[in-house]
Image 1 (cartoon, rainbow, N blue to C red):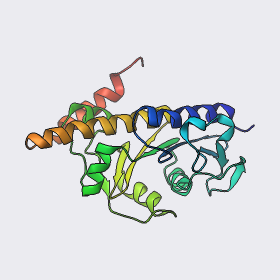
Image 2: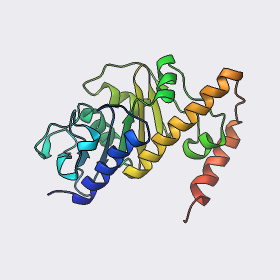
Image 3: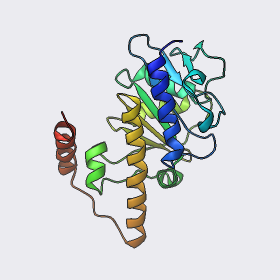
Image 4: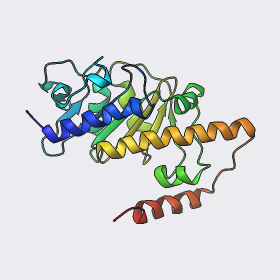
Amino acid sequence: MLLPELRRLVCEVNQALPRERLVTMTSGNASGRDPETNYAVVKPSGVAFEELTPEKMVVVDLHCNVIEGDLKPSTDALTHVYIYRHMPHVNAIVHTHSNYATSFAALGMPIPAVLTAIADEFGQPIPCAPYCQIGEEQIGEAVVKYIGTCRAILLQNHGVFTVGEDPKAALKAAVMCEDVAKTVHLAMLKGTPIPIPEEEVKRGHKRYQEKYGQK
């Protein structure tokens, strides 16, 4: 079996999505890219998260040709491989329709940098790309065009994509995106959230990236 460790990790991250309340039923997915082979491991289409196993994951190349797997890859696989082709530093992608973040997407609104948690994890407001059709490469094109250096992006009328250096990092970004979206939503019910100055957002992000954790 190709890429057994990456299959295991991608399977675990997919199964974490409903546990973290980022998806419902079979919506959403996670993938990971192996830098050595340039193959990606993606979720099979329409399979319930609780039924996933590493063996059911599908290995594709970066043009979405199936290399190994008995099941069809996710219908979002074209988006994932487009992002991998054009963002070689990205080794993992998570896609969700999490409620609070997607409510901003429904409004075509970015999530403003009004929390230190946004500065730490994302280093900027979380952008919202314009509406685009689902099914081919248009969403991947929008992610690449509008995400910039952020770890997360909203797609107008659709949902959330996050990226990372590995599947756990992309999952963390998805969880944090939903968490800050909820807090900003609640703040907006009370009034107008206070923006953090851009330079302070950058300073906080740099400090977090360099000093947080056991580095």
